[in-house]
Image 1: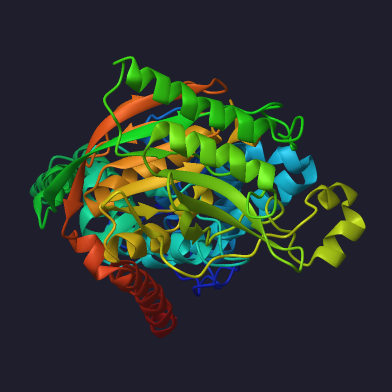
Image 2: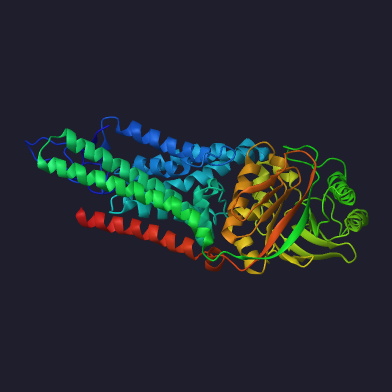
Length: 562
């Protein structure tokens, strides 16, 4: 593969080469090194377009395989490297469709589980997510013309993910580079700068890898070009720079293992936590409801089973028992029979329960809630889910969409989001609660921990998505949150995977999917906050601004040269 510059006189942003002097032939000799700041029109040999297409597809595929359920995390940096290679030296219009190709390769299979709401919904969401890769790829094509471009490319990845996590409809951050690194050296950066710094570290490592490879290729080309002193010095310089790039990439990886030690929270107490996974009928279907109260009965039976096991000495006495999102398919605040079932379960356990349910409002809307249920006092503190699943828990622009997709009417009531952090006092321990989809976004868990949360608790209902990989993807995000905030985390699910996560992101326990399960775990309740908790969104904002500023600088420099 030979690097060529066949359009070195072109105007940046134009697809037409500048006119050549009459009587002169064009040359393929580059005027600048493709490894530092290639000019627009750079070509990777005669098969340039093929190489770029393969790299773009390879980038999306590498990130897909890096994410759960595959978990080949080392492919994360390779994904960033391949996309940079695909657009390096090309024009922004070509970079746009190469970015679309990469994004579609990742997103279409990644959110395949959305087809539970219909193939059209799945493909619409995948297409919307793919759109974000177009401006990012255009920006990558611009900033790779600058010196030190691995830094700017990594910052642009953060900017893309930041926008995708916020707009439209509240955002959909699935598939971040960071979310493929739940218990790897990279995840340590979450303790300093949340998911944004993890993504930056992954993309920076990929950029440094590509930069080093290109330097090494340039050195080899210099040697092949002849054995004169100039070529020899150039080869040695490029080999030295390649070694520096590889060493810098290794340092980035190693730094992630040290990052959590900076400002690590202290242990305040040890808490024994019970977990109930009651299972549901019809897993993997749009409707998981069976007979009336069946889901509620399953989870109440699980509490009684756990209480019997404690009395038999199989488990230690828990301080609290956690139940998943939608552990009741009936609103106990409106149905006396449902309340009696939960009261009986709490009395049998003898400790407070955290019970997930939908609480209906007088106007027909509802809140997706986790309620602290005391064995004597009954219901107490409530956390209402803040990030709701569009087309699953509510229908945006309902009148419009249900006109064209009639099955969306199966979502008969729209949930409304909560507004307060999920810091709930249960048996003397403050839990940082984020319900299901909340965990994919930075603010809910961060704000709950900042409000005093000592243990992260994620009640969830993945019954629609069992055996699709979605459950594993969400669990990986929870593992990152544990490292981010220096706290153990508990995932409790209706139908799996329920899990216990250590503060370093490793799994201490995980249930099987689509089975009933009970478990008791001893956890360390933490006090104090990590650097990431204190800084909040500042690292993400700073890195995003850095990437956008680099892209703007590249445009200005290109215009001056033109």
